[in-house]
Image (cartoon, rainbow, N blue to C red; front, side, top):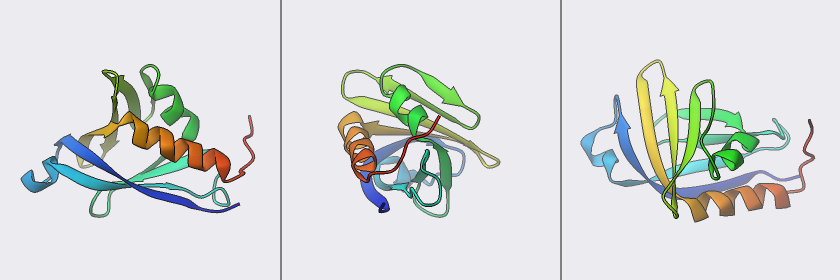
Length: 117
């Protein structure tokens, strides 16, 4: 099993501490490490902000609104998806192209990680 890491261009729509220049398209790090947790993915915003949440939540949120704790995901039109991330510093709303998230998810499944209940 291997680590999957992918950068996706995304727009930070809002963020409590996002500087104005980060509101344009920025590289967001998507990471999947099956050795650490075969059911979790990580989303890292520029700087030190990183959230870990269920891979199935990301997948479900591309089809219909889904949420769990500090993370919510929902489709936005036909070609975009929104990921809402809550932290002690506030809320960041990040808009991705759906195809980038689907490509990442496909790569995580191809990594050969077991998927458990």
